[in-house]
Length: 405
Image (cartoon, rainbow, N blue to C red; front, side):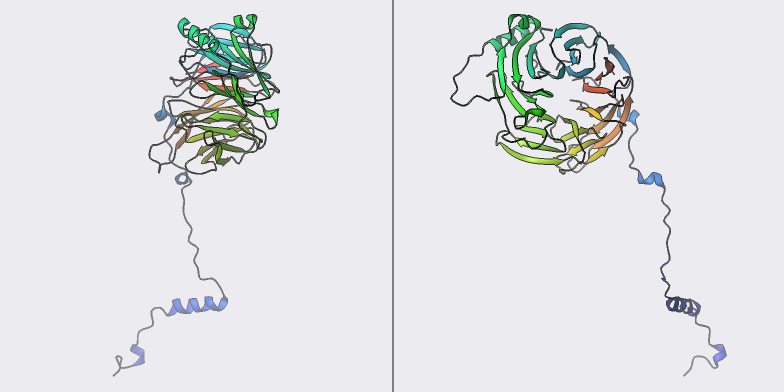
């Protein structure tokens, strides 16, 4: 009946001590959980990024300095062929430079500080739009092919006034350049009521937009050059407008106020999207050539990358600069973008977008370009990429323009 003939032969219970110990713990009301310590190598937490050497080409060395301005250089524009650049600033002149030689070919007296300029993206038109205080000037720079310059002048002079039944847009006034202005290169002048802060062309080269931050409800105007008419697309301004940009391929207009970017559909005349930047004050923005990604620079030292198919909030925020960002720019063909700041540096980043929609953009800072001196709290005020080469032009408060290749 019994397995053991006597109690002395019964073996001890093997889990007896363990159970007695746990019972004591229960009585002590102690937690019985053992703390497992996780050994984590801090380097494993960082994402594996490729080395900058593998991401070439990108601008890294200073090649040419363009000297000639006597004041702060506030804006740059690069010709679509990449042969010339134009620059303007507080010394009230616009200078045209040959890119490869650094020679100043032409100087236009503007009679006021130049705040913004944009080269017409249409290669068959030799035009530059310049924002001089409260005037927008359309200038024929007459560089390069004489036939193109003559054809451009013919296009402007072929305008026939039409008696339109609709009301004229108040707030701007079109005028043709006088004889002296014509010799200077000016062709058309559009007078605004207040100072213009930015001017930008549509990709086709006929429409351009101007921003008048102090204009109240009339802060943005879209002008059509061939018909010489202007319209104000918004009846009511939603905050202080900082920047506007046209979408590279679709009929969208990006409008940046201090904290938000609104995307409007111009054909349907409705708001498509509202992006939240999470920064205090937007200073600049740039749209990728494919049109689905946007970068925004701010005065509180941040750069936000938006993937518009993904979210209305920034996909990534970079805090690389020590002072306010003044300008951001995308390269048209290479996977590069750059930000210029008042700390006197330009940071070039590799930003690759994949065709596979499930894959996130690859963003890697690759180079800090130094060289500009900070003067009066201002550093690098503008940066523009060369249209076809991996080069970048920068304009600084030290009266110089630098080319990095």
